[in-house]
Length: 83
Image (cartoon, rainbow, N blue to C red; front, side):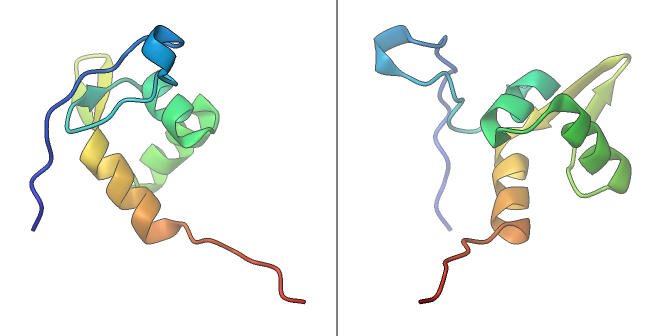
């Protein structure tokens, strides 16, 4: 199994980066929504349905990038039109 490297999030536009986080780190709900290109309400729904793992610390919610990537890998697929 491949070990993930820890990296940091760069702000939008810095060094030509898109601002998407990479590596294993804790993300906010807004970070996850931006990464998945969905609304924060969609993230709320995934949390309520139990399909996206999260950590709750008081009123703060955080996600691990690896968990988000696992969710996308297991629940999303590439669709192609056939001729």
